[in-house]
Length: 177
Image (cartoon, rainbow, N blue to C red):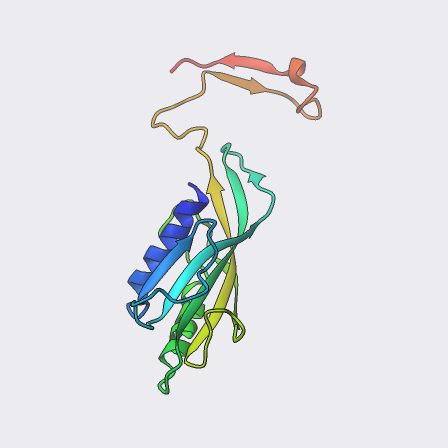
């Protein structure tokens, strides 16, 4: 799994779940545009970006869990029926716990939303909100990813003589499939 795949999965899920969202674009290093796309109307739009990452943690399977901070910038028209604000409310209810249909994504958490009246996309007729959340993404391939793949050697040791520096204390067992 890669971060770009996660951002694409988020956009696919949001456009499927919220039909009132005219577009959802993953930002793969590009900043959110400072102007609405020309000739595209003023319907609600979202941009999803990686806001930050922390130190990855190795798992017992040889994969890595990477803590991410994700940010969505959502812009849409200010209307008397508060349809855009209802969309933001729906996003706040939808994002927590979501894995975006990916087995490698842990549930989203820590969701926050903020109105951004000074954002370049904001105007008197258009509101902008940012939603941010934390999500852990599992990276890499599992050591035992192939079907019926088994180790051919097994190393055993007895505590406390285990770990780096004690390799010579291990007993090796040969395994035949």
